[in-house]
Image (tube, rainbow, N blue to C red; front, side, top):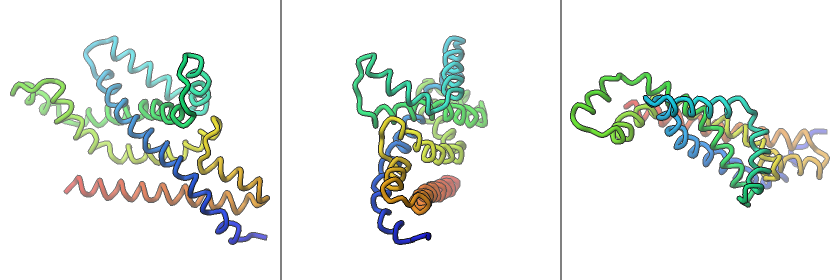
Length: 215
């Protein structure tokens, strides 16, 4: 028989595990934005070598499942002498994967900006670096904000995959609690509610920020 008491009793430990879910998702998204901006700049570069490198990067990280990327990173880093905690490896891998998608978001946003703005900035003597930092990227982030928020929501859901490298997040904790209590339905429903609540908050925060930026 379904029991809400099981959910109430185990909800605190699931919330505790949600910290790792949020940490991996937010840091992965921030890393993805920074690296994605670099990849986007390479993709739009006049140098064929940089464009080719950016295309290979995007193709690889969009074409290989995140689960495989996590496993490769987890077992490869010690081989090359980098003994980092599993959480660090997970954040790095999630960020590298997110960068491939966010670079495409930024590239599409930059293409929506009138080219005359960059040309005018060059005409008054601004450097290419300043044009990117002060003119192009702020507008690209504003235009691409809905897609960036959507990517963060996808990362929250995809963070459940890091359980394969031993990180205790919502999914891993719910599996452990379900096995200990023999009440999988209640526990997994509670986990689903936490994921839903997190993503609803992110979506609402994104809409609020979007409205503020359009004022």
